[in-house]
Length: 107
Length: 244
Image: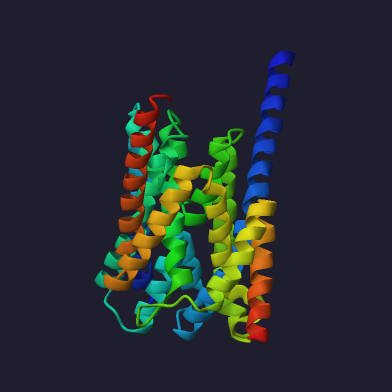
């Protein structure tokens, strides 16, 4: 591929990425939101994060199978506790990486 | 005259303060992005995508998972149309995040929102939502988080393309950076029993959905279902207590 093809591909990808990020914000920020919608949206962050995380910790990809005996889940326990105790994003990321690295060396 | 310039200085200082707060909250995202950006760069280099194209992609798209899939699809010879469609489907989840952020950006002008929307990612969303919910967070701090993360993403993906081949696979637990970040961001959101319940429901639905339905619909599907179930549980308990 050359410059024009790359540019077309990435511009189109950028457009289909940007519009879903932009339209709801633009539309909803200038309307009075009904209370039920605010209540429902307040549960969206926790639901999305859990939906992103659970398959990483509990399944194996290609082929997709349930797998609870993996270092990802084992290391998630101390990482969770560190996050809970410290509330530090940077500290949790560093500690999680270190633990995962050590687990890889030991197991 | 004098008063006016004093006001402007105060305004300037407080803006600077807000940007600094944004950077303070956003740096751990960079820690997570750096290894992932490097990894993406390495894959792109292996797929023989030139370094300028990787930079262009990170600027125009700025969406980690979609970029990984794009590189894999390009390497596999997929059509441009299918790559664009896949990107659209994967990034549709951001519409939910954008809606949730709108609660905290009521009445903000459209130019700011248009700039802000560019930087809505899983990570910046979670950091900004947590801070907004705690109060004491401004739109400028939130915008700083987005753009700091974006800058690091561009630099790390480009760096990965250039030097990636020298980094051994799995070094320093870099594969776990994003997972650890998600764990901490999830912990931030567990602010009561209803949030814990919603998280458990979302996890169960997501795993089931992931196992039985191919593709990435499990993210949007599980989170919308879980938020809806959580919403009705909350409403029921509130009605039975008859208190706000």
